[in-house]
Length: 271
Ligand SMILES: Cc1cc2nc3c(=O)[nH]c(=O)nc-3n(C[C@H](O)[C@H](O)[C@H](O)COP(=O)(O)O)c2cc1C
Ligand code: SF4
Ligand code: SF4
Image (cartoon, rainbow, N blue to C red; front, side, top):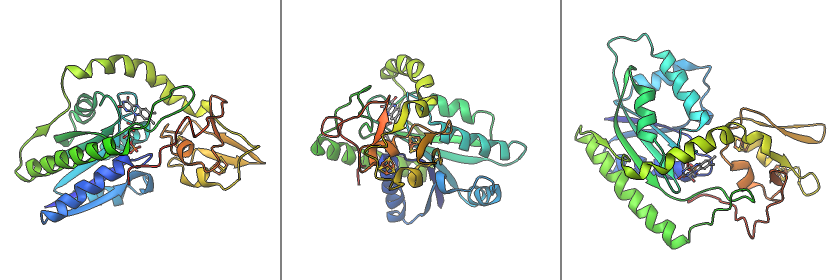
């Protein structure tokens, strides 16, 4: 069987989970391809639909932002669904993998709502707890110890193996629904506007910036513009924190404040 997984990963956690799933499928003798949505030319819809049409299962993987789907993933899915809107007699089973730090969000509900009345049927939904990727003076979140992260990675692999087994046995496997979702009601309400307006909070400290352009080149949505010696952030920013976490000079300011990396540790991914 052929599996195609489309993913978005700001700082590497989701990419890691997708890679594990891909290896599990290959070990089971299946065909598997993975595609980072930031590298897909959405203007060239025929490439995307070609991949979807030629797959037995299609997967979408993303981090949870504020108990929700990141804006870049939401618009990717909406574009894809628009393309398949009038395709009668077409059905495609879908699996979803999300990663999160503390609370997994309303992922299964969001997915159900998003895919309802479409040609896509969600048959598997897995929640992978890894770690948080934000540590700023506005929101200080301590890193996990390497031991704890490793334990979570082992648990994640077991969960992904189970999801693959169920898919191969054509069995439905939806996880992540339970009373622990309740704190998400507060998280979602508070963070929706924050995530949409994150770009307004970023700026660059020109005194320390090395002008290496890593942030400009690595931004998945091309939302950082360097012009006439100054940086600006565009509303297309998807709040992934990749620029903030990877700036070699810690020059990206959040809310105008310098964040000492010794206190606000940057996250460089699980690989
Ligand atoms: C803007 C933003 C919002 C987030 N919101 C949540 C959240 O509501 N719940 C949670 O558990 N983790 C949250 N996280 C943490 C990420 O979901 C987690 O670190 C994820 O694994 C990152 O995946 P990535 O490395 O593939 O980007 C958030 C991260 C960002 C950048
Ligand atoms: S990554 Fe940091 S140092 Fe490099 S250009 Fe961007 S802000 Fe400046
Ligand atoms: S500006 Fe930074 S946070 Fe926003 S999408 Fe680009 S890399 Fe991610």
